[in-house]
Image (tube, rainbow, N blue to C red; front, top):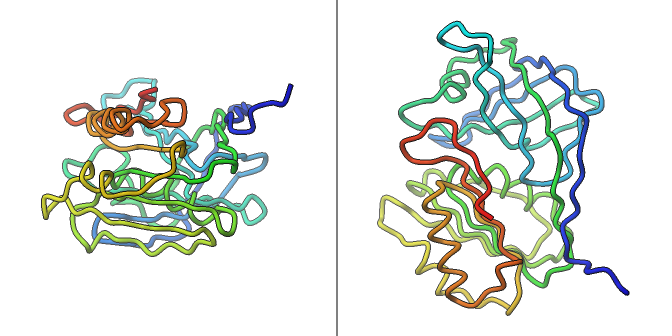
Length: 245
């Protein structure tokens, strides 16, 4: 019997803790900071566009267990020993944002992972990516690595037009920016789309927001098996990161 070629491939990696150092700083938009890190990347692997590494920070209360935060490997080059991370800047700043804002060239950062990858196949007729600022690193990586001609629609929720990013892609990409400051509504943006019956839908952002978006897509009759939703953060709670599936 032929195997379903739209089932995601799950791959596990050996966990390693690495020390990297800041090599470059770039302010992409008023609220998105890019740091390029350099150091030990021997054996580093990340096959999925929405993989995450753990950033490790000392316990501010002096404990032995580090404070950990999840971040998407925006890009990496093992041969050049370079790993790129994008930080969505917000207020109040958590430990990762606070560290990124203060980080200078040469400062050290310890990371762990990725623990594994979930790789979605390129067998769907259409890909719909929906996310807020915290999802932009994964969305940007997906667009930049997509096969030529792949149909991808992006709904990106940001504060204002100043937060738009320029992505280079070979995909047939329809990128739509939704502005929170102008009271734009992602659900209305979804209703304005013409989608095939069975696309792959990827949602990431604030957890309650992502649940609402997922429920709206279910109500529209989309196949739940083709919808992946993740809460990259939770309003009022520090360090939340969870799958909603």
